[in-house]
Every structure is written in structure tokens, then in C-alpha cells.
Image 1 (tube, rainbow, N blue to C red):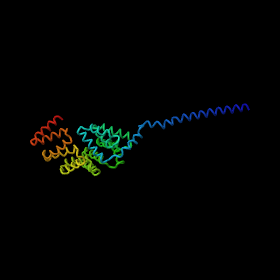
Image 2: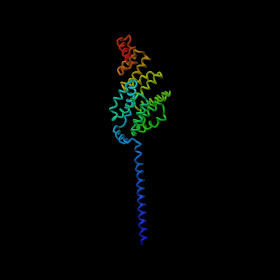
Image 3: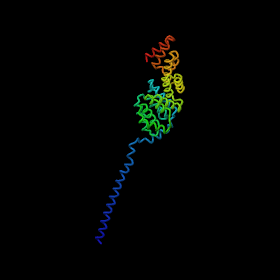
Image 4: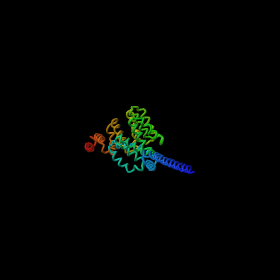
Length: 292
């Protein structure tokens, strides 16, 4: 009996030790499991969900209005006023998709622009602004294989939009395929009759082809879409001067200078047109151009 009792106690002790070891082992196994479930979240922006929820208040992108913002940004870069435009847009980037797009597209350096849009794409994965800017930039660089995915993302959300068609038009124009370029610019105009960049590009192609009436019509449509378009008025003034003479171009050069009084090239053309007509204005324009 005594031996049996001792054996039972020993068995209970061994059982208790084994059970304790098992429970400790289970507890130690649970700890890394918990860590495995938690650790991956550190690979992502911890504020990602909050950022995306916050940005849903921006509302959808106005795909018609963004074409005007693209033209404004590019005009500002040509005029050297892009920093001023970006400063103007900055207070609204928390509440306006158009302001965000303009703020980034007005970056003069294409690589810095791509970096800005790509970072926005990573930080705000549910929004179209980032992929749109990346899509446009890759097409500008003529790397279609990289453009396809962000362009498809934009298309899935909004269908065909005019500024992407403009980007494809520029791609084909740079490749020397004017027919394909014109096709895409025309698609842009069909999607959005107020796409300034599309009308401007069509005008330039028609001018090269010697189709004066079509070129002037396209530029007039670009000006109707945005009356303060510097590049639109300047393209028209240059063409009219070349085809019909300085006297006919003079009123358009005057309009160019109303929009961009700092443009030395336009000041010079205006001054030349005024020589013998109004020498005081010609002298003033030349002096202003020299100061510039």
C-alpha cells in the first residue's frame, strides 16, 4: 500500500510537471503567433486607412475641369510662373482634387513631378490623382510598358478621359506618327469639347499640314475654352504673322501681352509690328523686352 501510494504521488507529480511544461510551451507558442499577426502592419503607412478615409471627402475628380488645370499648369511652366501657381493651389490641396493635380502638374522638372505623383499614389491608394499623374508622365517619357498599369487604373475608374487621350497624342506625335497623334487629339475633343490642350495640338498639326482654316478654327476653340490661354494666343499670332503679315497679327500680339506682359518674345514681335505705325509704342515695347 505504501509503495502503491508513493507510486501514485510520483505519477501525479510527473503529470503535473508535464502539464505545466505543456501549458508553458503553448503560451510560448501563442506569443510569436500574436507577433506574426501584428508585425506586417508596420510595413505599411500606419495612417493609410485614416488618410484614405479623410481623402474620400475630396469627392470624385472632375475629368472635364482637370483638362483646364493641365493647360493652366503648362502655361505657367512656359511663362516661368509655376511656383506662383503652386503657391496659389497649396491652401486647397486638402479639399480639392483639382488643386492637388494642378499643384503637382505645375512642377517644372518631369522627374520631380513623377516622384510627387508616385508618392501620392503610394500614400493614397484608393484615389485616382496619383495613377493619373504617373500615367501622363510615363507617356510623356514614352515608356508605354510602365504607363499601362496606372492608365488602366484611371480608365477603370473614369473610362476614357480627355487628358489621357492628349497624352497618347503627344506620345505618337513625338514618335513621328502624326496620323495617330491627330486621332487621339480628336478623341480628346469628342470626350471633352473644352480640352484646351487638345485643340491647341490640333491647331499646330493642321498648321504644319497647311490647313490654315482648320488650324485657326482649332486655336479659336482653345481660346473659347480658356480665354486667357497664353500658348493658344501666341500660336495663333505667330501663324497669322507668318501667313498674312505683322499688321494682321498685331491685335493678337496685343492680346498675348495682355495675358503675359513679361514675355519678351511677344514684346519684340509687337514692337516690330508697331514700327512706323506707332513708334512710341514700339520703343516702349523694345525697352520693356530689353529689361526683361
